[in-house]
Structure formats: C-alpha cells, structure tokens
View 1: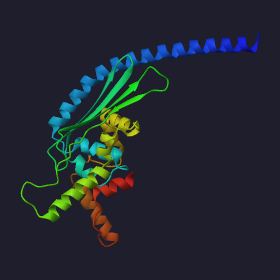
View 2 (view 1 turned 135 degrees about the vertical axis):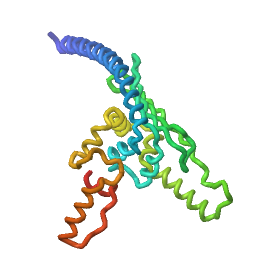
View 3 (view 1 turned 60 degrees about the horizontal axis):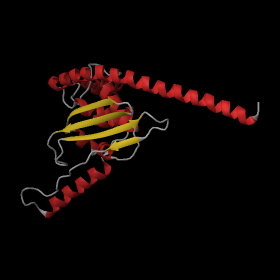
View 4 (view 1 turned 180 degrees about the horizontal axis):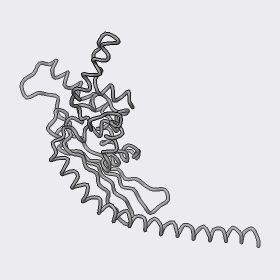
Amino acid sequence: MTETETLANINKIQAEIDAISEQTKKKIVLIEKNYAKQLQSEYEKRDAMIAKSGVPMFWGTVIERGLIDMFDSLDQQVIGYIEEFTASSEFTEDAVIKKITFKFKENPFFTNKELSRTVSMSTKDSDSDFNITPAIIDWKSPQSDKKPEKSENNKKRKEQSNIKENSFILKLLANAEEDVEWFEELMRMYQDPFSILIDDDEEEEGGFDFGEDSGEDEDEDEEEVEEVAPKKSAAPKQQQQKKKK
C-alpha cells in the first residue's frame, strides 16, 4: 500500500469518527432538552416557595457568597435591590440557548425592572460559536427631582460612574464578549443555590445566615473573649465571609 493510499484510508476512518461524533452530539442535545423541560417546572415550584417564604435577600445572599471574590463593595448595594433571579436553557437542533434574568426593585441606579443576558452556543461544529445578547442598562439621570445643590448632583454622578465601572454583576450582564465562565457559574447557582449556602454555613449551627444576628451563641463567644483579652468590636459579617473564602 502506497503512502497516498494509506492517508486516504486514514481520512476515511476519520470521516466515520466525525459522523459518529455528530450523531452523539444530536442525541445528547435531545436528552438534555427533555431533562431541561422536566427541571424547569420544578425550578418554578421552588422559586414560588422562595418568594412566599419571606426569607430576606435569599438570591442576593446566594449570589454574594458565590461571587464574593469578584465583588466590588458597590455590588452589595446592587444585589440589595434584587427581587428575583431566574435561569433557563432552551435546546434547538443547532444550538443551546441559555438565559439569566434578574428582576429588580425600584433603585437609584437604573430604570430597568429586569436585566437579562443570553448566550447561544452552536452544537453543530466542533469549535462551538457563541452568540451573546447582553443586557442594555437604562441608567438614571443623576439629577434629583427637587433642585438639589450642585455638590449633591456631583456626588450622585460620581456614585453612578463608580457603579458603571466597578460593579462586577452589572458588567457581567452587560458584557457582549464571549467570556461565559461566570455566566455558567450563575447558571449553576440558580440550579443549586443551597449547595452554596451549605458550603458557607457548614461550620455554623442554627441553619442558614441571611444577615440576621445569631443571638446567644455570639454573646457566649464574646464573654469567652473577655476572659482572655480586652473586648474588641466584632468584624462585619461581610469581612468574615471574605476571610473564609
């Protein structure tokens, strides 16, 4: 067999491998599509329960703990206005379309009630192509309704500029680039928020901490510290969480 014939046979086998890989991809997409449909109804039931539970800052707490290493201090202001967080996956023959949506209460930064980012990934080619639809943020004017002092307008303008430039969560939503690492991380947070809460609270007693005082345990700890050294003021909980990370 000549070298040319050998290469032709190798190429034929490779074509068969590619065909099998393509068939496998299509079958995987069909399985994931059915899986996503079943899960979506369960997600909706869970989200309705979370909304009715009255737990303060549930999604804000999950997002903060999951992304704390990336957060700017201003992000804590932003997540304080989050009312709902949803994520969904839609499967077509040629693509997987993933979407995350945040619903916000009235806030001093932007007029949007919802901010969404969509990532569409082709399933046809081995080198998957991404199509990003970022959120478009309608920023509020820093002007107040009542004729404010010039210094007050300047302060609001500076704060809004800082939010635009430094808020990780808002930049992620408005990002049109193909970097989807943190987008996928948010998808996972939505799918299983309790794994984040459990990981963060596994050494604590009394359940999840959503920013409320833990009560007697803290008092007892403080009394023990007093016996050894002069009492010091307790560090804010956000700083304690950062140290744990």
